[in-house]
Length: 296
Image (cartoon, rainbow, N blue to C red; front, side, top):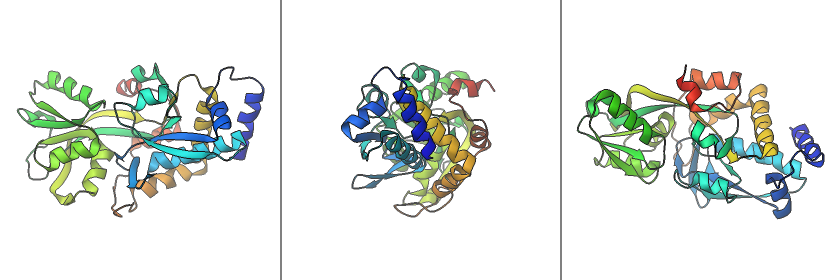
């Protein structure tokens, strides 16, 4: 991967980026800040004591290793826990240099930030208690449905409420762990969210067998690593790193490590094989928004 960093350094010297970009910033400060999530399933989660892990965390670490090569100096990586509500503003204002959580790439967000090539495609599903009898969104009439504040699942819920005439009450968790707790404690009858987040929370629950993922796929969405807009060097570096991981076969191995093998801190298995949509994203790398997936 060394040639990626050299190419970027040469591009910088050639004046490709006239404005102060992330590479300039980290070269001057010696630090780079990664936005991370505490409970975004196997994509990004906390190990406690300021340590984080997951599929997107590892990909971001590879990107930052190449950023370090391009900067030609050792960089201190700082981790900043972000939420669904503050992640975009923190990227925009420069507090976070690269966000490595579970952010849907959509057309509205592309007006404010940039996204790396998609390495994971999500299916939004419903989690319920196994004994609830609920098997589809049509059975949520009169029920309390949990979702996480600031996520695209809120919009999906409202869309399906209109489409199917289902009258349910939305209850909000401040983060994904809090939303799952609403389901676990009985304050919600269902939790609508990205499938891998549901699977990850179920895997680490006190009694995983008490829950199941049911119903139709509500949406197919590209989940991507987020950066500031108009920073072509970091965007190129991220895309090149992801392309290299795919071509070498390393991407599939990283996926298997986080989704199919036991992972810390409890050594539980998410058990979610790479979907056809995720494999298709690897085969044809792009940063297309969710709206393009909906057209298919």
